[in-house]
Length: 194
Image 1 (tube, rainbow, N blue to C red):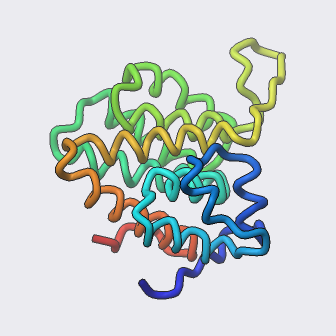
Image 2 (cartoon, helix red, strand yellow; image 1 turned 120 degrees about the vertical axis):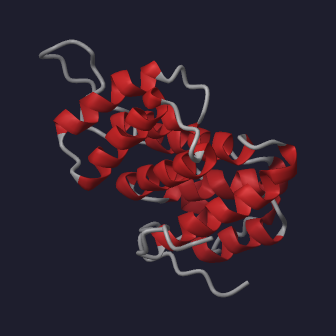
C-alpha cells in the first residue's frame, strides 16, 4: 500500500483518536503510543481490520468530511434503486456538507427519521444533524451534541453500506469505502476512487 496522506486529520497521534472511539481488542493491540494516525490506519487496513479502520477514520475526520464520506458510501451502496426517502436523506446531508447552516442541519433530522434507519442514507443524514450546534427539538432550548455523535453516525452509515450487498461483497465494499475516506482525509472529494 502506498503512503497514506491524512492532511485533514488534526490529531498528532493515533492514540489520541483511539481515546474517543471503541475499537476491538485486536486493533488496540496494534496501537503504539507514538504512532501517527496514517501509520495506524494503514496497519489496520493491512491486517484487514476493516470495521476498526472505519471507526478510526470516522472518529478522526472533521465533521463535514466525515459526513461527506457517509454520503458517498450511502449513494454507492444504494445505487440506482434508491427510494425517494433515502434519496432525500442523502441530498439533505449533502446540502449540509456544501453549506453547513443551522437550517440545513435541522432539515436533515426528519429526512433521517423518514428512512427508518434501515440503511446508510438515514445515518448519513443523522451525521449532518449531529454535526450542528443544537440537537434540541424544542425552540429556544440549546443542547449541543457531544463531539463523538457525528462519528457514530458515519460509522453506522459506512458499515451498513459495506454490508448492503451481502457478505460476499463486504470486503470489496470496505476496501472501496476506506479508499474514499482516505482520499477525503487527504483533501480529495472521494468521488474518483473506484
